[in-house]
Image (cartoon, rainbow, N blue to C red):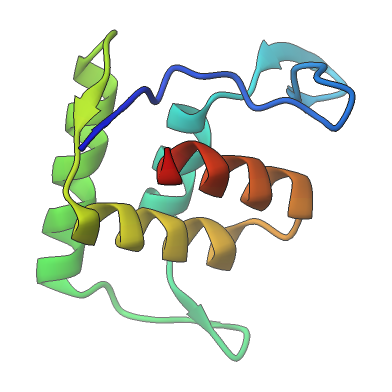
Length: 105
């Protein structure tokens, strides 16, 4: 499936989300996806050791996202991984919900 990770994540009023109050950089699906994929896995408040195969898969996805100014080919399994990591890493419903909508096409 082709997905455009360069899409900007917007709020409910369709204004682009910003990285922070001090940073005017707009948040994209690429930003959210790569941040979530590269974050440590936390279980019950404790960082877990990195799993080699999952880390390799995450790096591969991130490199493809970063390398392409166009849509990126991702498998159904990879979309599931990205969605899982986003919902684990981010706590904001607007970020998670909008990212999921974009990933589902």
